[in-house]
Image 1 (tube, rainbow, N blue to C red):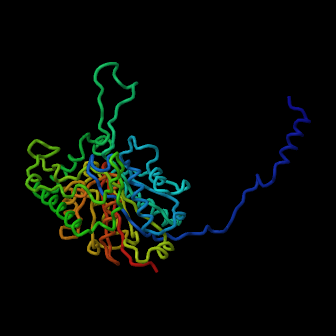
Image 2: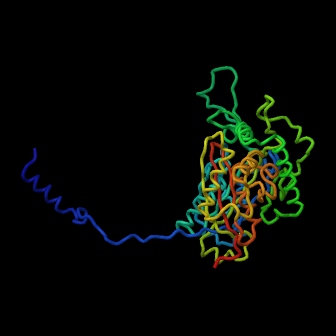
Image 3: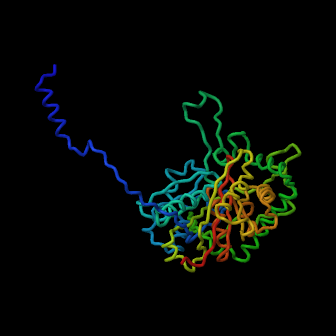
Length: 432
């Protein structure tokens, strides 16, 4: 029962509520608008790319990532306290441990206050990580970022269901995590190589075309190493074992070319007499990492002059198509990136496409009209290796080391599921 006294007390308490709670505040002032800023690449580094079950079998992906990050930071000369975020691509995360990008950041010696994000866009992860980091700079949310990718395909485990999902007796089936999470089209239930086969047929890319391209990739990589063209981008990795320490300074697979054997290999995916994709004209499975330091104009002006890879990120683009057509997704992403950059393909000095399969390059060259362009002049994933999470940033690292001041370059990479990421950069000698 509510009495008159009780009502009086309620009204008294309500009156005691501060007036500002019931007042709405309005302002006619317009919010301050920020202009989009330019993002600059100040340094770039990569580890050597090791063979599958090669020199890096005892080194985790985050540890490889840490080596690349340390090297990139050292080359940039940017104070560590300017770095606020680390973005690292990593695809095969089974058994890698919590937050792989965070591990790489911490292992590289960055403070625990630096935030980290792991990016999984399959093969495009490393390049997408750079895009995300650059956007923070462009929006004025950060001064400096680290971005790249890392993968150790040799250490990917086999998967087994939990006990509640296992049969009470009989056989237990293991799934290969490498295939399941990295090399398998989940929509069509077949290997990515089948997608490459369909692309080869659709764009009339013959077995001979693919083999000749693969041979060229190996020969270019061999010549590049002979001329020491990768020296400035390599971050050596020290591998510890019971026998001591070994320093790995060179890619491991580029010398594995036997022309007579490559041209006689049996198709790896289609064995009905129509297959053209082989182990020789496809990329290899590998371990490696790459990283770049990205900064705003002020940092680029202060630390970029005379830098080996100083470049402006001009534009980037993603594009998606039917999953089975993933090999030609770059042909959709590249025109968008070029349009955003305000340039044409004829203004591009050097192109780096990821060589997931030789058919990928040949088909994209046909679609984009790049048959006579400078594409993958130092070799690519077929000869140098394809460490999934690192490949997108690896091709960017290699691209940057080829460009001369004023030149434009394009890095483009397809990814499983039917998509691609592309980026346009312009090499600079200084920032005014």
